[in-house]
Length: 104
Image 1 (cartoon, rainbow, N blue to C red):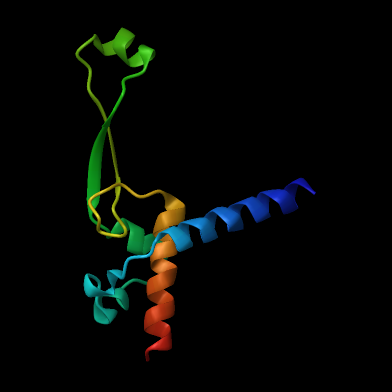
Image 2: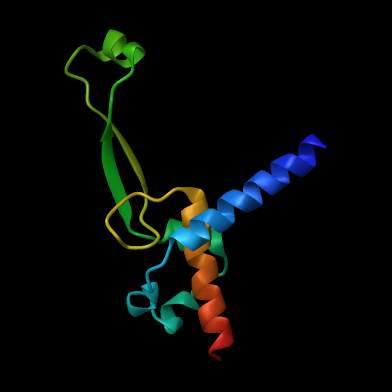
């Protein structure tokens, strides 16, 4: 039962991300460019990277001092200038896959 609820939770998160991604990215990623990616992992790896600053944890301050700056770098799969989480990247890939697969 736990496995079933976890799977449902993952699917629910994916579809929420898919629905929240309303933009048409095909004006940025052409069918020809999209065809170069063999899977979603390669699509994410080749997406532009975005770096954000996050609050330092107490352990960081203790180790490096008060002036520590902590950053995270991640993928911008929908090309909106913001770092995307994995469900969003999956939704963008799936939306492009559907669009280009149906428009052969």
